[in-house]
Image (tube, rainbow, N blue to C red; front, top):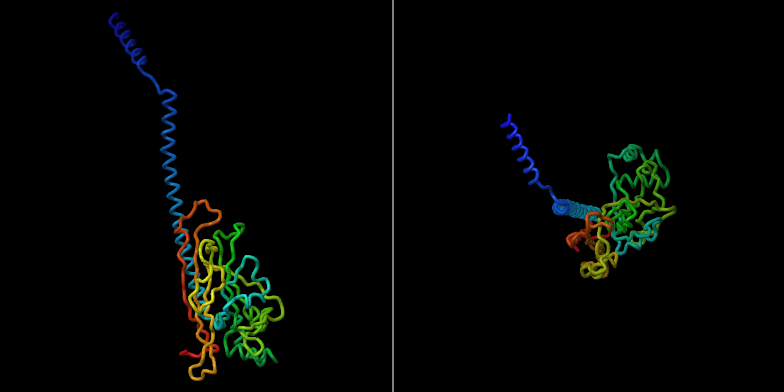
Length: 324
């Protein structure tokens, strides 16, 4: 029993000695560990967030470049079907009602011949009905002409509109497309002409001296693309077109067109006569992936895309002589 008691006493002494030698972390050590851990975690989180921002900016930049390419391709294909291009869009846009509104700057205006779509139900109804039994007088002549031509002239205007930051558009500006067709989809079957429209051919009303008709022209607008660059005040805005071309608008360097100034030239067979020359058009477009209110941070200089350039030879044949 005495030996067992002595062993217990020895073990108790050893335990007390071991507990006496143990010590925990001090408050300063805990604070230092927390600060160091926070710095490491914060740095890692910052790097992750920055990588996500960079990846998102690159996605926006790539998307903007693709949008600009599609936009300029659409404009050049559209203008390639033109039969007449205005050297100054103001010559025709000043007669339109509700266009342009403040903030909309016309860049390009032209007339094109829109073919009748055979897949449209109203078009099929129109062709299935005989002009002699459906219409009379002026409308009968108009019906015969339309069936022969199988298309009608439409006025098309491209404009640049500044974004305000209070709308759904996130870029600096956008491109809008306005059109004034002779007929709407529902008005074709009855040959009801769009208000304000007049035929741009004839002795009293021509393409270059077109005058609107009675009624207020509708505001037929559609947005072609967003994230178009706005005017760069540090870059030249005039004299950007080649010699012999007229810049429109004259004070833009992000979305503008160069229209050949001379639309006629001397006939080689008879110098006293002039004939229409093949009119060419050059379109310039520059995008900008940065936004007014973006949580992605500022874009670098690469955020302003290189200016895209496309040259168009319009396909219209009115008042033109091939080979000149």
